[in-house]
Length: 239
Image 1 (spheres, rainbow, N blue to C red):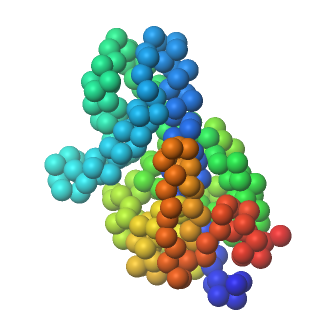
Image 2 (spheres, rainbow, N blue to C red):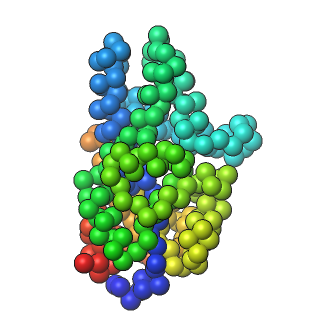
């Protein structure tokens, strides 16, 4: 297995869902926020709707309906509509900003920190996320994520899966696309990176959408497939 991937010098990681548990983190923090602010709603549905608004919001930017903006700004647009939908009133601007920044405080999956620490013994490990640089940096501090480098779609003025995001990441690392492996739980991300020459590893996260929303994902024949980051390290012959 190692010989096939011997060219790889860096691993770039999707973050939301692949490295961190956005669903569990938002539900847990939402319930605490609700208790302190007298908000009695279904936080699981709130989390799922917040996440489901993300793709359509990016598409509005791609179509030119909105100017390019970072993910904090898009999350806030979606949050504003959810506050209306769930009839949440009376929050201060400080409250809304704190709630929006829950995306900076997402908890890593149990294997993420130990797996990344192993992988970075042999490879550069970097984010490659639609999350903006400040968000990803704060998340790393919060969760103890040992990135060598924070790369973001924000640096390109595009969003994944636009090819510019992947091409720019390889260029910023001083590598050819074939020397980079994209690691993600989402096959669409892997296919887009593969189209510009990346190698790919699929790490499914069946609980990404919560225990009631288990989703299967299909690997491509060219993908490495691992159940978690420590198994990926094993497949790449990292001690």
